Length: 209
Image 1 (spheres, rainbow, N blue to C red):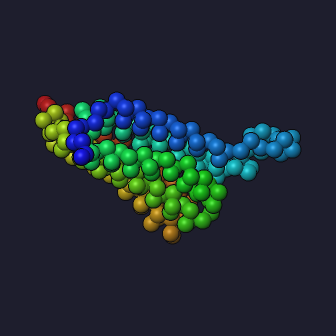
Image 2: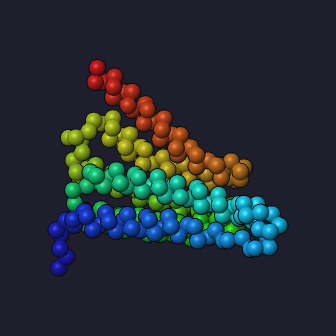
């Protein structure tokens, strides 16, 4: 018989933090130490950049995107008093796609000029974001957050969670006519979230006057 008792948060959150930490750490493994003869010829920085620029780009992008997802999960976890079975499984699926990030990053970095590798990478990140969105929706209802926050805040919280997956899917569409633009579209995540946060704060301030 399946136990329907809610799951305590401590072990789940600690496990989630550990998976994020491991996934982020594994990103560095695709960066290889340059051979000594290359360092003698071009210098350490030159040797590193000349052969591994795509890997360095993949590391930087994936590190900050993973950090963004972890920060969002951290904020969401503050609202969770316990995990029911649905929320637990959503968290497990989230971690599955987080664990995939070092692989999809390496696949994309080593095939930097191919859109198919870039699409695979974007789909991986979009799925992390989409699962986080589903978790956010579930937590808002489960924890009855409408009693603690305004409808404006909750609506923006849901919309904010959708920005990441939508931007990554947009990157795929943009990459068809312009591969370079598709690869820098992810910057929109930071821009849209920052602008949205500012707009919501202003509206909240006006409503409080």
